[in-house]
Length: 402
Image (tube, rainbow, N blue to C red; front, top):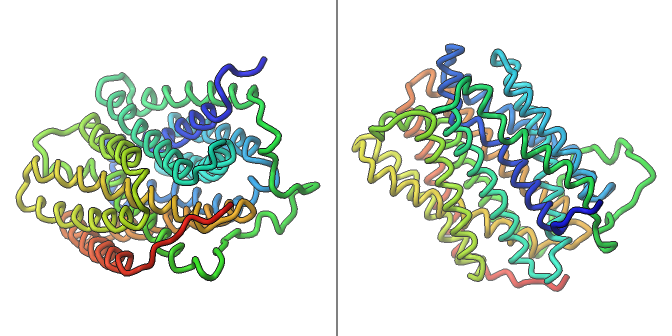
């Protein structure tokens, strides 16, 4: 029996559920820290194990979508994701949780790449800007739903380190069931067909665009680096440093704050889709720079209003950098190399998530959370401002004919 919903709708649903499982643990980190007596560096290491899994997936498994088609890879990714989420619910120490987060990271790379390609292929209107916006919107909505559900469950449900994972597990089974029932149009067959998997197919699949577009592609990748890096601060450490900025505490507060950033990011992306890519990326970089400045200022002011302003600025920067970055990838790529360029773009984004937050975790153990946060915000804020200036001086990138 074929699914009543369109393949496009189920691909969007599966991507949303997949990324929901990746972000759900963010408001739970203080509970793990209390239950297992962890240091800040332990939290960042657990967070980074997920990112390492995603990075390895993008580096070594990026060609699977071209070889087997996005649907088979998406099915595999969602099944592996479900295994990782179940493992997280059953974890008993940092090693077991880290292993589960690593599995979730592997699945995240498969889901993000395959679903992004699938949504582009199933986009019958041929509007690349629309495809980029829909992809970014779905990712942002799924990421936002994860911490909201996790935070609310952890605040009021019994056994929060187990029960918080039950909603994404149930939704994942629904998505897996649907992906085995949908039928795709014939035009969505893999670009390259191969008799089987070879060593070459799992070697790192880093790609670069044609020479005239390398400069713009690099700026698009750095938009992902900055947005992912800034969000990693909120996802991994916000439940810890929010105690210095807000009078309210608990998993629900941190989960709703992180979710609000991503829901607002999704809404901004929807509104900003018709606007020129260059304008969006410039505003996005400077919004991230402003976010860093506001966070540092609020460390000393302790104002809920300044924190709210930093959340608004973060949402804007996250939305516009992700939207413009995905738009650049679609503009500089052809169907034959889109998977490789998307994987490279996401690799740069995940590196931005891993390196800065690891540094902050290490600094937190040695100089304290306040000093580490100031160092993090100073570095990423200056980088974002510099990239904004460079983007303002770049020429406008035309929409190529596909």
